[in-house]
Image (cartoon, rainbow, N blue to C red; front, side, top):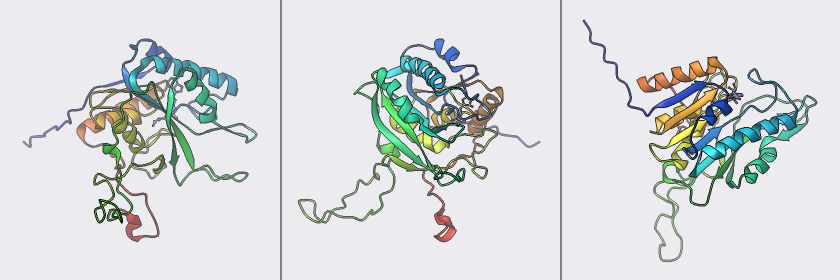
Length: 288
Ligand SMILES: C[S@@+](CC[C@H](N)C(=O)[O-])C[C@H]1O[C@@H](n2cnc3c(N)ncnc32)[C@H](O)[C@@H]1O
């Protein structure tokens, strides 16, 4: 009889619940989360939300953010990933602009407003098609965790040399790669993306991996209060961090658990962080 070896990766624990985020957070201890990453509903009438007035939406966001700030470690970060709220008559309201004062009210400090650029999405007919969203990265204080080396990217000109001064002739770029900057070009999760699930608005795991690797250390706790199918938790576990998340839709929580199990078994496919974006103008789209 063939012996089946069930190889399981030794990952940190995941805590996932189907529950309203404020309810879950009320049970969690002050200062326990090193990183809170999330993409809340945009109040645009998606399957998982009900449209409400912008005022009520912002009040609700404020209540959730209050609790997130309480849970945040003193060296921790909050990354709020948002796009636009679009009213029924087509007026655009950038959510990061509307939410910024709420974070400032709690004394958080903005470190970057990261532009996430992607090349596919809805084709608009009465305005330009939206091809970016933002991540507001706030810290609780000045002494915050930030590890640049794990997220460095290959330099454009690796052989560039100093042309004057005491280092003339030596390579001028960091051998570990360059700072990725604050404009991130990462494909969004559309039908043909390896990470696509039943969720209509997942964010890509590689987007969160950059945040996890730079803003936390191994063993730290990472939380997503609107976790959907658990992309944040997957990014956390992949890198040895403990993952916490909740969603009010059981079907998304079920998929999140399935993804965690697949990650443990080594069968979960995620788009690698170092894969170049497909470029039709070069052989094989520039893919390795
Ligand atoms: C934009 S999606 C997040 C998707 C997630 N980033 C992912 O990659 O799967 C927002 C999620 O928030 C959930 N949600 C809405 N209100 C919630 C609440 N009060 N508590 C917890 N989850 C909520 C929705 O069901 C939806 O799955």
